Amino acid sequence: MSESSARPRTTDAVGRTVGGTGGGTGGEGAVEQAITGRQFRDVLGHFPTSVVAITTSDAEQRPHGLVVGTFMSVSLEPPLVSFLVDRSSTTLGTIRDAGRFCANALAGNQERLSRRMATGTARQRFEGTAWTVSALGNPVLEGIVAWADCTVEKIVELGDHLLVVGRVRELRVESMKTPLLFFRGGYGDYLSSATVLLDRLVGW
Image: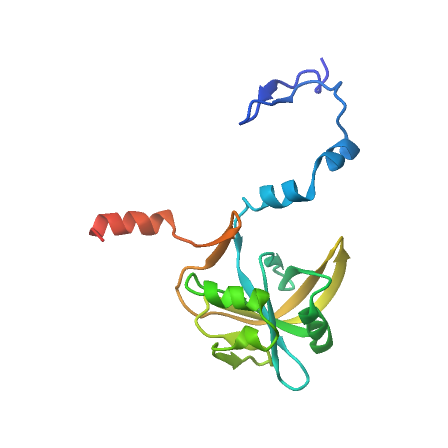
């Protein structure tokens, strides 16, 4: 008996038959055609992501920034991180010119800052926000969880976005605050099960 013919047929969470033998009209092309942009966004919105402010500065030392939900580590040796950004982003041009950026992991109480950096003008994004300057010259925001100061290693075109890969030159944990998350189209705060258990034990 072949491996494919021995595969069991099961049902998923909504009752659709999965697995089993071939014979359907599937295939890569059919799957791609069945996925709409709205469905793609709605389903992937159920994958929680961290909210990270990417900051840099221009030749006049003016701060620039944007918010991403795609920041991740890439490599330990050498230490590389990356994030995705829409190719229409104006901040991307500043990052290209500067050749550097800082990834700021926003804390759970910084939703307002995240919204301002996501929708405001370049000047509005930093209004009312304190920051220090990293060794590379990037803004490090006050009140964040952690940051990583990077030089641009590579920028790769991927569909309607660009993947920016950075080499980490310095990084630091700033506080033990819980991080800000984006989930199902809204913001939320992370709370570990261990924290909940501890609160119950001490009667908080």
